Length: 404
Ligand SMILES: Cc1cc2nc3c(=O)[nH]c(=O)nc-3n(C[C@H](O)[C@H](O)[C@H](O)COP(=O)(O)OP(=O)(O)OC[C@H]3O[C@@H](n4cnc5c(N)ncnc54)[C@H](O)[C@@H]3O)c2cc1C
Image (cartoon, rainbow, N blue to C red; front, side, top):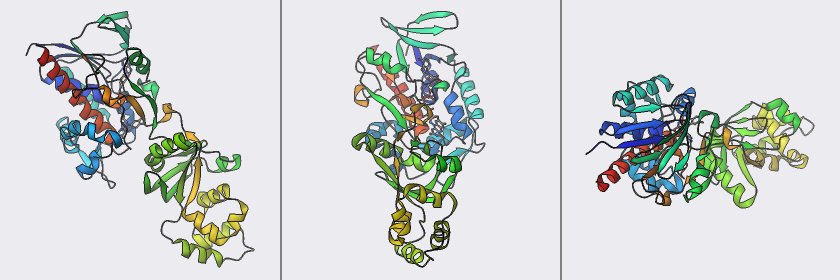
């Protein structure tokens, strides 16, 4: 096959993975990124250990992408969690399975992997051009802002791998939504995913408990019931257990205008036992003492009940026991997308053909987090970005070949 000039815009995990596949097949690939270095969000993910994939049963893994699971399946089948681990090992980064089944590099960071990856790409002839911000099209050509002014570039195929809109200072700012909408591409609004929520805490509660972890609880929403840990923040609630419920809470807020995350503060005790033990307490004792002796609750757990329940419910052992087992925390709104781990929304999947090419813009492909899918934390995000990056690269090769 003749060498073709391919532009990849966005040097995050999805764009770099596409560059790897294309350059390995002998194509001339240039990756452009607006930032002074590549893979900034990937490096940030490394700060919390880089949960690169998940070791759970593959069928379960492949179902984690909600309504988009079927559409993403061929891409995931072609680059499974086992492939992710083998790929990382091939770049000198061994991985291990943590207690939760999540997979991390043994070094618990991203920098050695990214360094080796960029080295491999350059060795395969990929050009990496930083400080090139794509600003749109002029005719069929791509326009970039560069340190040397405006550059107009022609490519035979272009892959957009521009990311979502979380942590915009790392480069993915979602500005592409306007550019692509102007070209007639259907885009679902970007929304925060895997995010915290605002709660109307009293001043006293947030001053005293912001930063306090709520450990060994379970939380329930439309997403189901999961054990874990959350953190009280000045604004509301944060942490992995909140992220697991974030999509369900966000969607419930948007359909009903209100949503609660229901917390079981004492997962090991039944409501009957709690009611009995609380009933036994001296009614003249303070609430803190009654909760400590009758329910084993103190600190932030006990304060949370006081913060959220009316006096009458605190005074009645039956009601109090029921609240300990299912305390609704009313959430007001998701925290801003800039603080979220990832974005929901993006380029509609039915606006892409099987090859990840935009139906309205022949020759322009899209991949990674900028597509309209979401997943919980757990290594699903990176795996899907890698997998769709590879799928789009194969799509580009098929399309170029078909045009010959
Ligand atoms: C704090 C944090 C922790 C995370 N931890 C994990 C984790 O442990 N496991 C996991 O699976 N996922 C994690 N993620 C999510 C994961 O990092 C992202 O899903 C992933 O990086 C998305 O890859 P991408 O290539 O689609 O986009 P990005 O990584 O966002 O890359 C997009 C690139 O496009 C560039 N760009 C954007 N617009 C332009 C433009 N106009 N011109 C040129 N370049 C442009 C950006 O500079 C950027 O480099 C985490 C995210 C955050 C914020």
